[in-house]
Length: 383
Figure 1 (tube, rainbow, N blue to C red):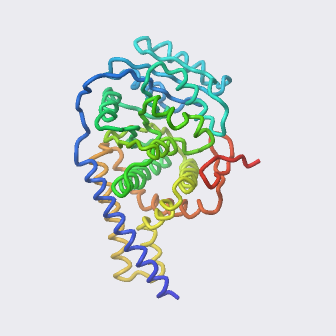
Figure 2 (figure 1 turned 90 degrees about the vertical axis):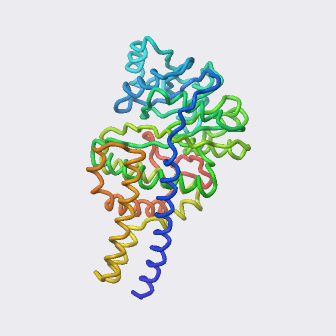
Figure 3 (figure 1 turned 45 degrees about the horizontal axis):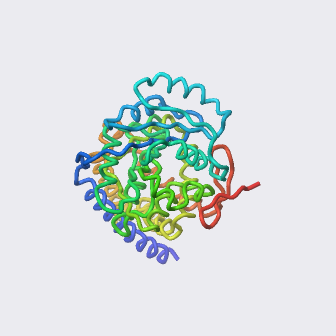
């Protein structure tokens, strides 16, 4: 029995090792080329739209970065789906203080849907004055050239329907936020780049989504995805199925997470895992073979501390730290991030546990409500 378990774990480790090395290659190749600073041949006005519910940590500074873009004509729209949201007066005060920016709030204009964020986006899009939309979550922070680069990438090739961006947490403020940062860097970013290499980009990422109103209308607008939790994935996937190409920007956006408890991290990752499982079931099942450190630990438990099991565990840890080193140099670029690398093995063990636990239910808790994710990725009420 032990021999059979060891053989299975050895096979899983071979698969996991191949994946980790390939993901390291994909990360290195993608970030080997510096991000494009090419100037736009012409400028098209853009509406930056940001759906809000409450106020995230650092929102004032996040908003300021979107209001200080080196771009000739744009507006910033901040949307609330609930007119009774306590954050509206505070956001209006921020808006009033930004006298050099064309920024305004939009309250409760979208049609109802299971995903209130999408209803919010629908109202924002209807209120937007410009033909191009740049959608970004409220906890994101950018530099002054974000909009210019995004638009340059949008017009970098024919038939581009969407430009989307990866994101990072460079300076986590707590253990939970550090685990989130490491998960984004060591799991999420490599998995996106592996998918890009193997099948192309067929989805969007909520950190930044740049598209035209015309393309949005062709896929039925936001109303068509109003009952889905993974609205960013649905938006990109529907554009891709429509025949548009999707560009993954080399501009990695900063996610300002604020303090996060370990329990918050686990809940967020469990929701993400169950959403991923519903949206891309085959890809999520295959994601299970990527957990190299947990498999190495299981082999160590099964065989005991032999030369082979200890060498395999050491090799697994070295590969993970090698990936962390590349991502730090190419993407994170923060010395403060390095002190959290001691948590990598713990994060990997938690990540494997969350992946396995995600198969036990389709229930998720999001924005204060409990939902059941249906087989096609739609949201269903649990009550």
